[in-house]
Length: 122
Image 1 (cartoon, one colour):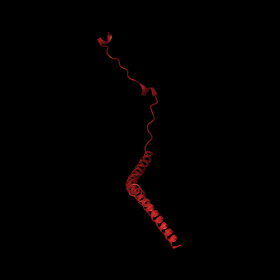
Image 2 (spheres, helix red, strand yellow):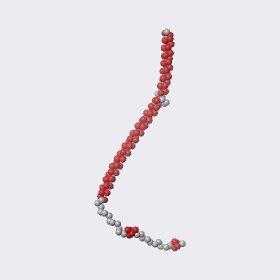
Image 3 (cartoon, rainbow, N blue to C red):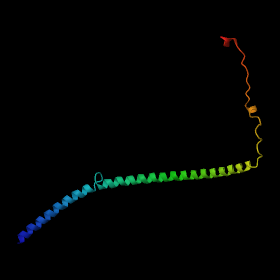
């Protein structure tokens, strides 16, 4: 009986050793930096860093755009106030003179004759 239990114990130990060997190979392939999950994590880490830099650049550009847009809006509001003031002051001007009573007088066209040159007769 002791012999059978020893054989079974050795067989179990060999099975466990073989299982550990297979598991360690799979784990090495899994954590390989070039092909496995480790490589994917490294690539994703680099991409996250690049995206963070791009986001910071976009944030700075949008802040600059917002500042310039705010300055332009203030200038436009100031100009609109000036235009309103000018329009309000135009109401104080006297009425323009009425147009001429004879509309044909404004439309008269002065016609002159061109001198006749000898070359034109040919």
